[in-house]
Length: 75
Image (tube, rainbow, N blue to C red; front, top):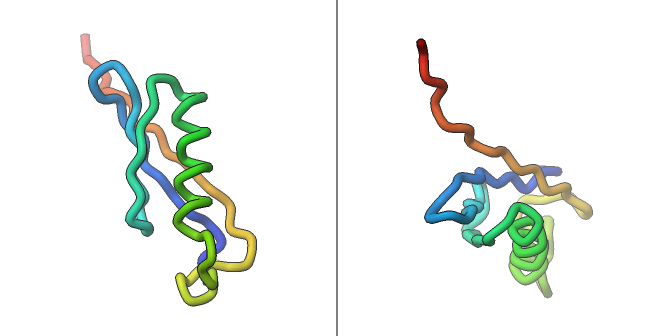
């Protein structure tokens, strides 16, 4: 059983996009705070009425987000 629902975050068109690593969830927001709220809502809708064990998750999984930084420029 997985205890973490993981998302990869990247910048896109002046906002942010979160893509689920092991779940079919994609959401976006203009700010990181808005994106965090949208991730919570999207995960809630994804698991609503579902048996988490059947989805491969523990009873109370955590949400982990990774933020991709742009490549560093070398001088």
